[in-house]
Image (cartoon, rainbow, N blue to C red; front, side, top):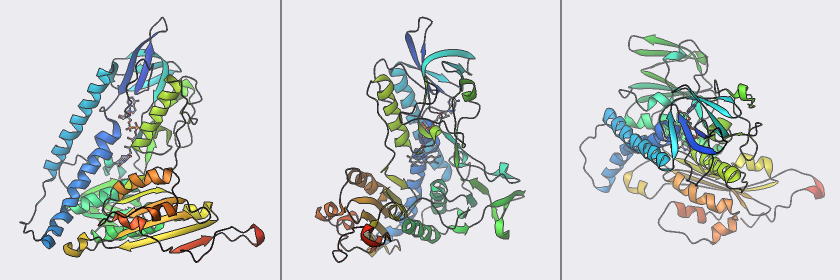
Length: 472
Ligand SMILES: Cc1cc2nc3c(=O)[nH]c(=O)nc-3n(C[C@H](O)[C@H](O)[C@H](O)COP(=O)(O)OP(=O)(O)OC[C@H]3O[C@@H](n4cnc5c(N)ncnc54)[C@H](O)[C@@H]3O)c2cc1C
């Protein structure tokens, strides 16, 4: 669900926010229809509960590290139902705040599913009412898919259920190699579950920088996650003690829970889009222009349902831009580049901008600055973790194209680096910035020695002007 700043008399919003008008055509109400719980995926079964569980899982390392700093602790034990209950209390609190804010903003909250009837009408299934709307905003998000479609897949859970398991599984198989699979593998492994992960590819986290992917893969293996690459389930069978999963290549894994995290699909099925003539792409996502408008004049769509960049801040920004465009008289298109991103595994990955591979595909000269070091804390804790940092710069202009960090607080650093990269900072600006000592982040302004330069091979005078090679 999206959060909008209140603006008086915005005649909005979606199928999740609908502005209806009376018979005289005047805007008489703003409505939001929600079929599950106010707060949407992020608050109820996404970012927020996930991060709470990440915090819970990291105590394992912190208890172990404490001994090196002189602490004597009794052997810690973990109570999963207590964590689930605490998490539930917090998301219920947040959900209530959102509902309250909507009501204070004069928005009618319709509990129940909504479906589009035509360009100007929505059916509210809760009470069977049909309401009219000058503008309809679809922000119905996305839902996990249970794929591959193999016998027994109905036994598997998705991230939706993983947050509320009645007990902590002793053995768990997670299927998928994307950020949701990786984060849950990291969480459950630290909470005490024996975790196996099966992914179709030969590495985790397709689309992220290759050095970070390898570092993260090593980190997961260190945490005890058994990694099975190039493998997907072919069958899931129930056994007296749990489930037996057959994987391609003949491997078998026994588990108490099987979690499928192979992707998410936009929530457009049965929404009535055909009746209204709203176009979708091959994945079912609502097609929109740069201003989030569909091919139907009165219908807009934002967030995961449009499958642009499926992240909460992006959905929120698209919602703001929609409001400015339609009701504020200031058309605004959202720029979907240089979005800071994190994977909240342990070690954590934070990044902004282009990966090395993307930069090399797009630019003629690419400079790489790579550092790997043990954090100061590890000197006493004895921890094996390393921090990996990479700056990707355009060799011709010195502009920083991307920064990638693997290690503690990487997400916090990525958020701030996002400002510098967005502003077009050069590598020389990083070098000119005074270090803050002792921190891990200071390495970002101390990476003076270029570790690699890649020049596109273009023969003759057309070749790239990458500047001198000996300055790094
Ligand atoms: C496990 C997990 C972890 C994540 N972690 C992060 C993270 O760390 N950082 C980040 O930025 N993003 C994260 N995301 C992604 C983030 O949750 C989504 O990008 C964001 O919630 C999208 O917002 P939205 O408003 O488009 O859709 P949603 O938040 O999904 O909201 C859509 C709402 O519409 C309701 N709905 C659907 N159909 C109807 C209908 N017909 N009638 C009425 N209501 C309907 C749904 O119940 C839902 O509440 C995570 C997602 C998951 C699943």
